[in-house]
Length: 278
Length: 278
DNA sequence: TTGCTCCTCACGTCACGTGAGGTGGC
DNA sequence: TTGCTCCTCACGTCACGTGAGGTGGC
Image (cartoon, rainbow over all chains, first blue to last red; front, side, top):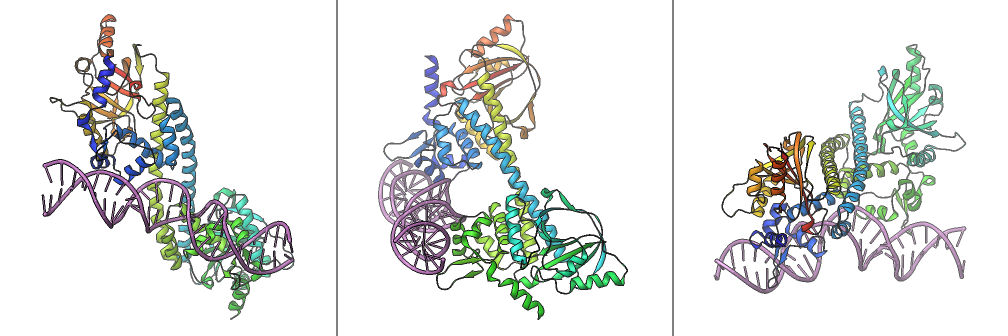
C-alpha cells in the first residue's frame, strides 16, 4: 500500500513534466521526430493536455528514448521496436539483445570489407598516378600481392575478352570475391602473352580472400594505356627489352588495371601495369 | 590509329551486350534499381534501342556497378556518387577514398559503441533475471565495475529524484556518456543511504568511458523492487542485517537498476541491486 | 499587440519496390 | 495465340523534415 502511494507520488509528478521543446533538447531529437514517434505509436508522451493537446514528457522517459535510439541506430525498423517495446519482458529484451549482437558482427564485417576495398583502391590509383610513361620498361623487385584467381578461360575459337570477362563476373559473384577490387589478367608465360595479349588465360582480383598471390621477386615491368584487352606494342617491346638485356622471363605475366572506369572517363586512358616474372 | 580500331571493335561489340535481366542477375541488383539509376542519371546503359527503348549493358559496366555499390554501402547519397562519377579523375577519386576512410572510422566507432551498450545491457538484464527474492540479503565478493559519475546532486530543500535525474540527463548528454547504459545511484555511506534512500548523492552509468569504478571487494548486497527512488524497507533491513552479523559498512552504497523501463513495463516491477561496501 | 510555443494537416525527400497497362519478338 | 521480356507511368514505403495555417498564454 505504502508502495503504491510512493509510486503515484513520484510517477505522476506534474512539476517535473517537460514540454516537447525541453524534452527534445535533452534527448537530442527533433520535435518532429517525437511527434512522428507518437503518431506511429512507438513512443508516447507521459501526459497529454486534453484541451490544447500539448505533449508533456516525464524525466524517466529520457532513458527509454535513449534505448530506442540505440535500437534504431542498429537499423531495426521502428515497427519492430514498437512491438518489442509494448510487450517487453526481461526475457524478450535479452533475446533481442542477443540477436542484435550477432547482427552487429555481420555489419562490422561488412564495414571492414568496405575498408579493405577502399584501402586497396587508394593504393592502386596512387600507383596509377605515379606510374611512368607508357613506353617505360624496367626491372623491379616487387613484394607479394594477394590475389584471387578466376577459373581458366577456355581459349576456344572466337572467345573474346568480353565473353571471358562476363564468365569471370559470374564466377566472382559466386565465390563472393570482389569485382569491387582491382582486376587483372594472368598469362602463364611471356610467350603466351605476346601471342595473344588481349585474352588472358585467367582473370584475377587483388583480394586477399582468394588465398593466391603474385609471388614476390624480380619482374620485368611495363605499362599500357588503352581499353581492356588492348596492349598495343607493349608486349613486343617488353620481349625485345628482355632480349637486349639478356633477361629470360621464365614466369607468368600479370596485367593489372591501375586506372579503369572507376577513376577514368575515357577508356583510351585506362592504364595497366604488366609484370612478367623473371 | 590501330588503337582506335581495336578500341572500337571491343567497345562497341553488340554481341556482348546484355539485356537488363541478364545484367541485373550478374550484378545482383533489381531491374527496378537499374531503371532508377538510369532515371536519376547515376548509371546509364551502354546502349539504348531507339525503337523500343530497351536498355542494353556492356560487360565492363559490371565493374562500375560494383564501385557504385561500394560507395552507396558507405551511405553516400546517390547524387554525390553521380557527381563524382561524371567528372571522375584519378585525383578526385583518390580524394573521395581518403574521405571515406575517415568516415568509415567514425562509423566503426559508432558500432563498437553500440556493441558495448548491448553487451552491458545483456549482462545487466541477465543479473536481473537471476536475482534472488527482494528480501534476500547477503555478503558477496564483487569484481570491479567501470562506471561514469555524474556531478553531485545538491541536497537542497524540495529537490526530488526527478529534478536530480534531469540534471544528470543534461550532464550525461554533455559528457557524451550513456543514458543508454544501466543507471545507478551513489550514496557516500550506509547511514546517508538509510536517512534518505530516494535521493542519491550522485547518479552514475555503468560505462567504462567514465574512468571511475566501483572498487572490487566485499559488499553487503540487497535488492529492491519498485519505481526509481522507492527503496521500501530494504535500507532498514540491510542495516539490521549488518548489526546482527556484526558487519560494519564503511564504504559507499551503489544502487544499480538491473530491470527498468527498458525491459519491464510496470514500474512497480523495476529491480535494483544495492551494494554497500564493507 | 507582439513573441513564443504548441498544434495539426499536407507535402517533400530518398532509394527504391510493386503493380497496372501496354508493346514486341519467338 | 501463348509466354516471356521489356517498357513507362503511378503509387506505396520508411523515417522523418519542412512549411502553412491556426491556437493559446504572458
